[in-house]
Amino acid sequence: MALLLSRTFYIIAAMADTHPGSARERFITATEEMLRESGMSGAGIKEIVARSGAPIGSLYHYFPGGKTQLVSESLRNQADKFPRLIERFFDGRRSAAAALQAWFNTAADGFERAGADKACAVGAVTLDLAADDEEIRTICHIAFDDWTAAIAARLPFPDDRTRHAFATTIVAALEGAFILAKAAKSGQPFRDVGRCLAATLPNERRLALRRDAR
Image (tube, one colour):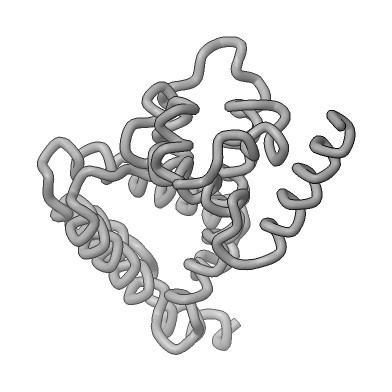
């Protein structure tokens, strides 16, 4: 009887995971939201379950590694969205400076619409890391490296080293803007940082003329 009940549980859990809004997806979404609001220390299992509305019995079926696995997969899920965000703004129809300013202005508006109290999940978790959180630290490190590479590929500097350095500055400025914006309960830090960064980028038309003149 116990074996039958166990098999039934796993069949039901597997079926639930085949459509949008499944228990697994709700756990991931709830965890991402809580990480953005209060970091890893504020995202307890009971609170995540309550936020998700999914049955607690299915949590350890989908995430046998417990909170570490749940946080890890939630961070990867958020990190994977970043390249699409970059493509949305750096679409080739406007200059890199205009794309950067639009991106930070949009971040400011979204931050304010969401209540002016939510950080980047990856950044918030990074600030929460303990010395033994090696798995999650690695995920955060890879996410930041991937974001930097995605931005660098779209910057108009003539050499790889400068593109990477400026992309690193953008990522650092973005994460710093979240901190300042939360403290001020305003998206204005995003707008200010975006404007300054955009003004620092070289003029792409002048660079093209210089290349053509060589």
